[in-house]
Amino acid sequence: MKNMGKLMKQAQQMQEKMTKLQEEMADKTIEATAGGGMVKAVANGRQQVVSIQIEKEVVDPEDVEMLQDLVLAAVNDALGRAQEMVSEEMNKLTGGMNLPGMM
Image (cartoon, rainbow, N blue to C red):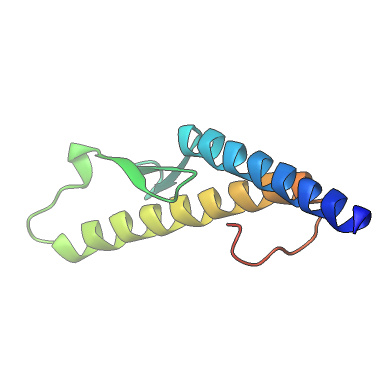
């Protein structure tokens, strides 16, 4: 029973560290660009897009599809990078253990 209590305490400490990490990751951002920097998307550690910047030179009313593709590429890249950032930090915390439902 003593070992069970110790294990529960360790699990609680790990959960607290993970909660703190999630809060820290929410404040970190990652940037991605498309079209040679003409479209920039910024995402945070919660994998939310927090800003999009579009240079006016890339806005062509005759080619809206190209702009849509650039925005989509930048956003997907930013979200993918944000997910990688969180995964790397989580792996540092857990020592590479896969803990389902933690992130």
